[in-house]
Image 1 (tube, rainbow, N blue to C red):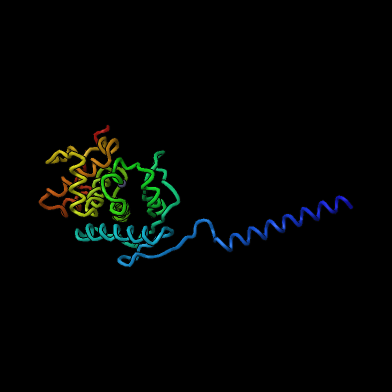
Image 2 (cartoon, rainbow, N blue to C red; image 1 turned 135 degrees about the vertical axis):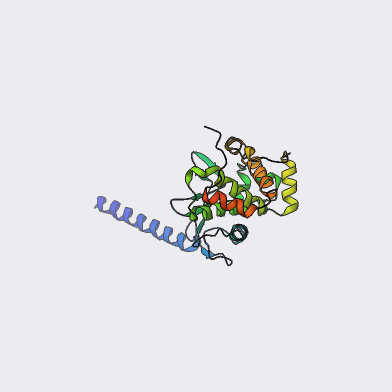
Length: 239
Ligand SMILES: [Zn+2]
């Protein structure tokens, strides 16, 4: 009898607990609602994120599509983007964003996480947070488009160069000039300075050098196509 009472009490407690959990879920919804929307300009899809994050990501992606598309380098089909819950793991390091060649998906941390976890060596300090966030999306969009165009993994310095150019192209000119000034960039930049070691220790300086080098080219589109085809490659001087 007593055992039965305990059993009933336990059962009742469980029922109350399940009912409470169900009620709570109904009231607040799942922990991370996954809204899936599409960028109006290009049909790339975004899962998760706030309306502001999705707007900035779509703007950044559209800028890269316009920049590379004007040189005939295009994504063959729309790319998926996901606003993650936190920073991304990239080869054991933390990153604000990442393009997964395996999943053909761009993952981007939330804007507030990018602002609080300033791992881009100054980007979020030297330009406004919305500009920085938009530029990160532009950077990863370039990686996705280059992947769709068959750029080989060993061309990673070339890949980062194009992504850096796309990232800086997505920053409004005045903010971009201020950013380059803050980095005390040396100019002019030679191809030998588009350097794997600089990328690894100072990625923002690598990006500034890439932008300056690219901006001074007489035929920037021809150069981008040479990089994509592999007929020109920057020297990976780590070896
Ligand atoms: Zn990159």
